[in-house]
Length: 204
Length: 204
Image 1: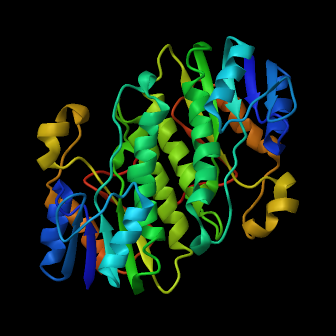
Image 2 (image 1 turned 60 degrees about the horizontal axis):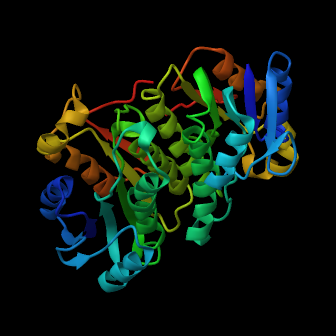
C-alpha cells in the first residue's frame, strides 16, 4: 500500500512509520521536513500536497495543534487554533483527499482522550476531539467506493511525558509503539467508523 | 430563578418555556422576536445581549444552525455554518456569560443524536454535536463559583417530523415536551458535565 503519513516526524508519527513502514510504502509528510510538506490548517496547502503525491491507498494523520490554557481566559482566537488546525485540518485532509484516494482506501485521524477524560487546561482539545469523533461517525456511513475512516484516540504517550506529564498527572501512559497499533488496525483492517481508544477506555 | 432562554420561539424552545416558565422567570431570546434578540454566531451580539439582561441564574440555549447536505459536495463554507453557529455560538454563550451568571448558576446547551447515530446528510451536525459534548465535559471540571454545565441531546421531536421526517426514517421521535425534561433536569438538578440523551441511547 502507498500510505500518506502526515505528521511523520512527530512522536506518534515516528512510531506509526516504524509500524507501517516495515510492510508498506510510506510517504512522509511534515510541516517543514520529510518527502512533502503541508500546513494542515490551510486547505490550499493540502490541495497542493495531494496534487504532488498523486494516487494513494491510505492517509494517516498524526498532526494537529490545539491551544491549552486556563478556562476562564480562553479567547475566541485560542479556540480558533484547534478548530482550524486539529479539527478542520484533519477534516480537510479527508475531504480534499477524496479525489486522490484509490477505491477501498482508508483515512485514519487522531483525536485523544480529553473529550471523555478531561484535564484542567484542555477545554479546546476536548471540543476538538469530540468533533473529530462525530465527523468520523458521520463520514463512515457515506464514504463512496468502499473507502473507510477511523480515528485513533490514544492516551498520553510515554515519550511525551517530559513535555506533557504535568498536564496528565494520574493518567497511565503507553509507549508510542502501542498507540501505533491503532493506526495499523485502521489501515490494514476492514473496520470503519470506529474510535480506537489506546491505553484507556470510556466509562461513562 | 431568572432563566435566559435562547431560541425560545423554536420547537424545543417553546416546550422548554412551557416546562420552566411555570416555575421560573424566563427571559425569552430569539433572533428577531421575544424579550431580547441575539445572533449567536456573532460574539459581539452575545455581549450586547448579556449587557442588556444583567445578572441571571441559568442560560438555556435551544438554537443553532448547521448545514445539511450530501457528503461529497460539502464545502468549507458549509462546514463553517455549523462551526460558527451551533458550535461556537453555544460555546460563546457560555464563555461570555461567565461574568454575568450568578454563583451556583447553570448553562444548558443542545446537541443531538447525530454524532452517535449518524444520518446521510448530517456529517457537519455529527461533528458539531461531538464538539459540544467534548466542550461540556471539558468545561464542567473547571467552571468556577459552583457553576454547572450540561448538554441535552434529543432525538428528533414529533413536531419537527413534517420538516425533518425524511432525514430520520426509522428514528423514534418524542414530543418536544419530553425533550424539555432534559433541560429541567439540567437547570433544576445538581448534576454537571452530563449529556442528557432524550428518546435514544448510545449503544457503541
